[in-house]
Length: 364
Image (tube, rainbow, N blue to C red; front, side, top):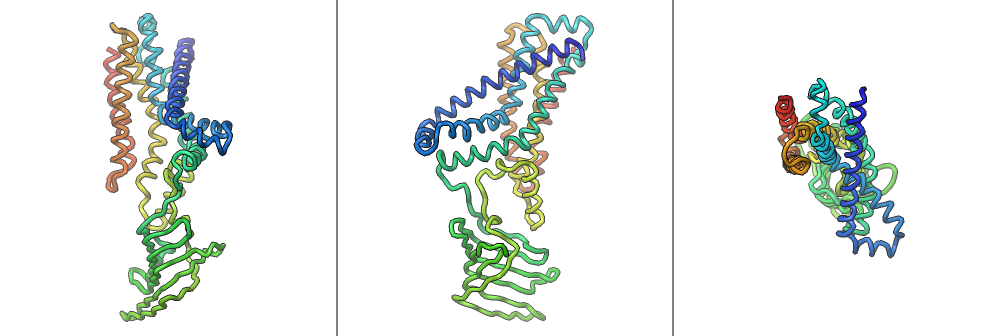
C-alpha cells in the first residue's frame, strides 16, 4: 500500500459516507413529511422516543440498503472529478502509474463496502425491517400483517398430500379440506371435510367437521359419510403453514429465508419466486458497488470541459438507467419458467460489460 492508495481510499470513503449521510437525511425528511399525520396519531399512544427508535432508526438501514450502490457511484464521481479538475489524475498517470494501477485502491475501498453491504443485506437489514414493518402495520397502514393462502397443496408426508381451499387466520378455521394417501402412485385413501379447525395443542391435532372417507381396495371404492359429525386427527401441519406475512421475505435473515425455501421444496412445492429473487438480490446488489465504482472512475478520471457538473450528470444518468434495468429484471426473475438468479444478475452483467468498454477507452 502506497501513500497514493491510502489517499484515494480515504477520499473514496469520505465522499461515500458524506453522500450517504446527505441522502439519508433527505430520505428521512421526505418520509417524515409523507407520514407526519400518522406519526402525530401514533404519538397519542406511544412516546416520540419509541417512534424514533422503532421506525426512524430502523428506516436508516432499509434506505441505505437500497441506495448504497448509487452512493458509491456518486461518491466516486464527486471526488475523482475533482482530482481530474485539479490535474492530479494527469500528474499520477504522467508519473508512470497505469490506469489499471490507479483502479487498485478504488477496488479495494469498494470491496470493503461490498462486504459491509453483504452483511447488512443478509442479516442486519432483515432484523431492522421487522420492528419497522410492525410499526407500519399498526400505526401507518393499520392492516393485519397476516394474510391467508388459498387453494393450498402440499405434502405432509412422503405419501400423504393435503389440500385446503381457504383458511381463516382469525378463528383458525379451514374450509374445503382434502387429505389423500398414496401407495406408490396409486390413491388408496381420501378424507374430505367441509371444515377443519386447529385444536391449538402440542400434538398438531385438528378437528375435521362434516366429513367423509373414501377407501380404495382392489379397484373398489368404499365411501363413508359423516354429515354434521366431527373427529380429531393428528396431521403434520400447523396454522402457520397457511398464514403469510406481507413482505415476509423482507423480515427473514438469509438462513431463515433459505430454511423457508427448503421447507417448501420438501413438501413438493416450488419455492415462491419472490423468495428466490430476494435471496439472490441480497448477493447481487453489493457487487454492484464494485461495478459502478469502475464505471465512476472511467467516467470522471478524464478532464473535460464542464468539469464536475458534467461528470455528475453522466453519473446520475447511469444510476437512473441502472435502477430502471434492475426493476425490469426483477419482473423476469419472478417468472415461473425463468431462472431467478439470471434475472437478478442481468443488470450487473450488462453494466460489467459497460465498465469494461469504458475502462478500455479510458486507458487510451
